[in-house]
Length: 302
Image (cartoon, rainbow, N blue to C red; front, side, top):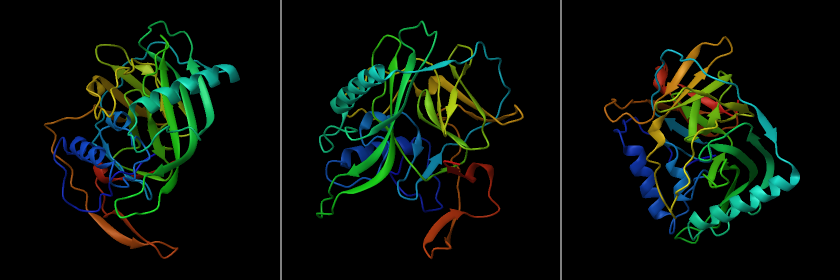
């Protein structure tokens, strides 16, 4: 789901720049046609520390490091919601999404079709997210200051609810055709994200706790961990995001990537890009070869 800015230059971004860019975009949304399938609503954008784009979707994922794989306790089991349960969840999600959304986009997701709704079974903690709704539709962008006509792109909508019945993150948007730069997984919330074909298993470890097994399906992953339920209108960040470590494994069970959140001491990566001509005659930007790991490109969905 997502394009906020197109990263076309070679210059590195300093630590914290991604969050500032998101804040700037959110402040401009009332007057400019910002193309951000995932969270044109400030709260949703806050969930992931990434730089994203919508029509040839380029997502700059912060550098990720490998580490040892800690033991995981328990297994993840899910249950598909009934039609009645799904309708109730959808109503809750729409109400909360509308409450926190920019005035330029009233009643978001109303036209989105629900394609999946499920819950993690056996969750006892009322603060833990145990229910998810996934919808699909068109992300329509507001008219720009020069009278530009509205634009729309295919997008997904994700909304979650805690075991206590409180909506956690109702406005997560993610567009098709994303290119993840730097890692084959990406968080779009503290307990949900996307993955590419090299990843077959993901765990999420809350601070001070054992890792939790995530549920993977159709390029998305979800984990039953504590959600954020205190979004205010137009919030731009999730201060608890760094309390979760995400690990991805390959088909052989090897740990291939660890996402630890924002490291303010880490040196920014410089990814050189080159322009190429696609078979259809259009121009595109791709990482220059040889490509270092932090600049490697992953296509989503894959």
